[in-house]
Amino acid sequence: MEENKNVSKNNWKRIFRKKWFFPALYLAVAALLISGVLWYQNAANQVPELADEMKNQLEENQSGPDMNKDEDAEPVMQQQEVLQMPVAEDLQVEIVTKFYDYGADESTQEQGLILHQNRYQQSDGIAISTADQQAFDVMAALSGKVTEIKSDPLLGNVIKMEHEEGVTTYYASIGEVLTEQGAELKQGQTIGTAGQNSLGQDNGVHVHFEVRKDGVPVNPESFINKPINEIIAPAPEASEESEEDEGSATEEEDDTTDEAESDSESDETEEEDDSATEENTPSSSNSMGNA
Image (cartoon, rainbow, N blue to C red; front, side, top):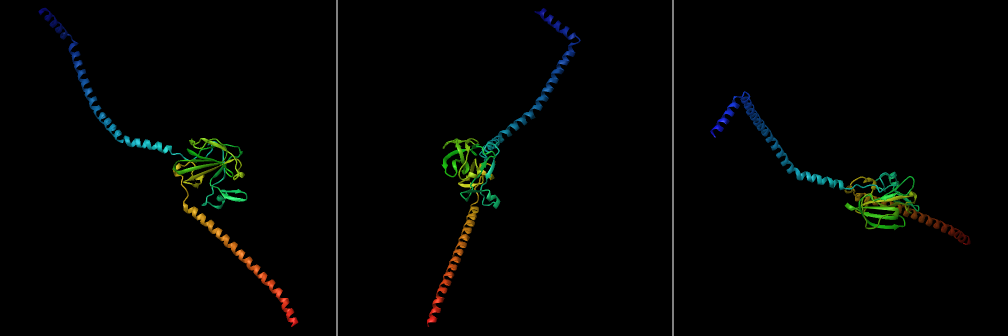
């Protein structure tokens, strides 16, 4: 045992006597010190970064509900449909009869009149046609439900659809009906084909398109490509004024007719008086002669 201890001591002494031992020991200790310093600096730098990350995460958690509300509100705006023309987007069409607007000028109002059996009627919608006068697909201008399909002697086949916000659309002069009553349709689905009718005979092959808000006709051209909630009915005052104007015009015509009739009656009375005077004149002269 003692011999083994002496051998191990001698080995250590031999190692200590080596020239490279102490420099290597110094280098190892220096490496450990440098590693410790670097680790400490790195840990000190990571503490503010961790604090900033925790702060940012806390702010994100606090602002999360508001951001979700904004994200929820954005799809709602995207879901709000806009009114579209009841034809394919790539189809070249023209409006051959416009909506009769009481507030428009005379030239514009003339474009909203329909001549039928020598009488003019005011158009509650627009007539859409093509230059080649060929039948084309008629599509739903808005998503909604088909509530009525009927055949009218003047308007031809008529399809009525009801939508949100109290909006109703009518499609008249339909040649072939391609839907059924009660059907739930998406915007752009085909409901029929353009045809002809008796009222708009001069327009040839066309579709008569009406939009109504709470039952009141509105000008479709004013609300094309606008959200459905922006479709509003005209002010009642405008229609009341137009009715008053029509009433006053009718009264003036009646007054003129009455005046003409009274003048003719007075002329007839004067003629009768003159003829009676002429008849009495010879008899009076004869009586005077006899006398």
